[in-house]
Image (cartoon, rainbow, N blue to C red; front, top):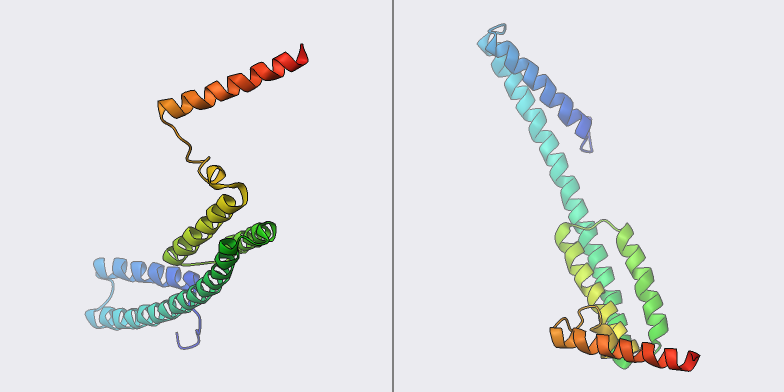
Length: 168
């Protein structure tokens, strides 16, 4: 175990398999108590070493996730400023799309991913609202009341009638 510097899932599984075989031998009383105790202490030390290596990898992953989250949040903060100014919204959309593509490729913790996604989604919605008007931003949620559906249907029918009049 001292030779390993990184966690290895295969080694973990091999160690579990070995311990299962040892337990079976203990159950069948094929080992002396001293032998079983020695094997158990050795296996426990090996598991402890692997747990420490796994914890170290998890800490490194969380640190990378935090760093990536900070970079994304900083960039989104800049883009939010540009959206608030209302300048170059086409370029802002392109930047948001690029950022969204990068977001898909980066590995985050579950919490960091949720926070960055919420901020990214909010930036898209506010940019859409600024660029196309607040009505466009709310189109997805829509007015699903009976009156709202009726009004949209009536407008659509009136437009269709106007097109038919122009053709004939």
